[in-house]
Length: 234
Image 1 (cartoon, rainbow, N blue to C red):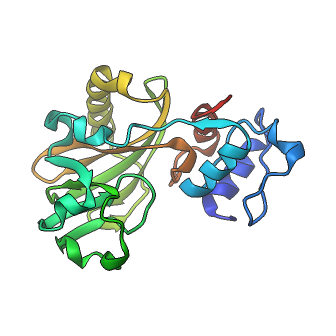
Image 2 (cartoon, rainbow, N blue to C red):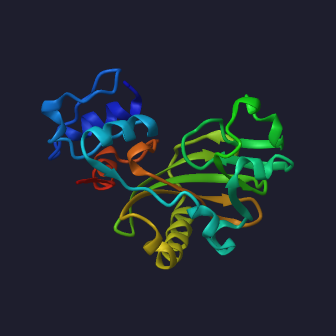
């Protein structure tokens, strides 16, 4: 797909060690390309189909990873399980743990999820208490170091403006404390989102695979390196 992110990565590859190619809408990689493909970037289902054809392992956190993180860093209670376990819950945030079969969000009742009657009740999800995020930041992380980052949400509005000096300092301090404790639970190349919860301060939002995460205003050349390292050629 021609998206802002894929276009920026294509431009970033021009002066890099890598050559980026787009494959057709059928998601079929021609046989003559497969041995040379060392990484993939795109929507999660697309990436996994391409990875299988090209003998790639796509690194990502364990499905239940977020639910195992201490509230010291999440600043909120998070649960993980099958959708059927939460059907009676009210006023919670709920998100798919893998493929996005419904849009994550806050729901008065779980049964109010759009298309609920068609969902697989044995699919796994995360739930958390509802909190108010004042700021959300995306970080591309390689070998326990933030290589590039971008804000993407501030005070209920999409916002990629730079952080203040104080915000940057506090985020990096929070990240360093977090990664010292949890680096062994994550791949070397990963995307981690952090943010500020109203009246609670900096907190972990979630971790996502680099090979399917949006860039926002992150440096595309730097993000490209993290994306490549998030894929392992078998």
